[in-house]
Amino acid sequence: MKSTVTANANIALIKYWGKKDFDLNIPQNNSLSVTLDGLTTKTTVEFSSLYKHDELILNNILQSIEESKKLISFLNLIREKANINLFAKVISENNFPTAAGLASSSSGFAALALAGCDAAGLNLSKKELSILARKGSGSAARSIFGGFVEWAAGKIGYDESSYAMQLYDENYWPEIRVIVLVLEEGKKEVSSRSGMQSSVFTSPMYKSWLDTVNLDLISLKRALLEKDFTRIGSIAESNCLKMHSTMLTSNPPLIYWNANTLELVKYILELRKNGLEIYFTIDAGPQIKILCLEKDVLNLKKKLNSFDFINKIIDCSSGSGAFILNE
Ligand code: 2P0
Image (tube, rainbow, N blue to C red; front, top):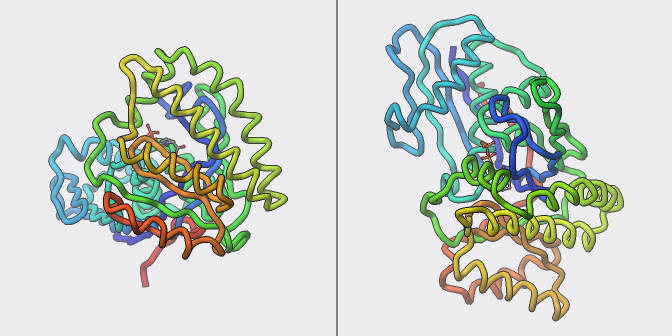
């Protein structure tokens, strides 16, 4: 009863920031993402009667019970579905910084959902896996799939109504790139989970966010169909800034950027004014993700190399969904 899976993180072009059903982890709005081949989690789950409790080893470090709480409640969902009562050992590794605003929970829970189900002898459809992964972490619902993915928000109280689906697979647009700039590797101070609830309840901008996000989604889907990079970049960048306006106006304010994030945002705008077609998006952390086309990657990276505060540059294409690695 053992299975190993890899899954990639995803970056939202239309963001998820807030839930309408906290118990079922059902979001306020539909979101749309691209799965990234450079941000990968590899997870092994083994259920065995030899284990006397659940154990999580994350990036080679044994986690405390407190740190394993989310994992244990997630394993309980799998045990209930599979009708087993065995404990599990889970070994998980990310090839990128964990909990720093690089969507490690998206790849983490997508990998755990598939590896856990496979190890428990469950054969779920991708839609069912997406519903399950969502309950670990919302964005994980999207990482079950590769390429461009939409997560349908669904309805309050209806577990089965909220799941992701693939719009285009990872081969749809090989020229599109997401260049991830890692500025800080530490864990963020306010988790996305508590940050987004605070924005829902306290930001006076939250209603405007909800009023415009669906129009952004429709326009972005149209632009994707037409492979119109200019429109995709502008919509994604503006959607990201609208999400950050709900963060900034939360009480207490949520400021996930640092001074270097701001310096790079201004630099990106300047480069674009001078003809290099690049756009930024930022999640709940200081890291910047630049959307660009393959033809501009070398030139862009050369320019970025002059910033010594950029710790790491990860060049991503659109990547695959979660899959089982067992021989
Ligand atoms: C997203 N983020 O759409 C947005 C943009 C962060 C900013 O999904 O509470 O870790 O586990 O459902 O999925 C981060 O939130 O939150 C996130 P939970 P999650 O990618």
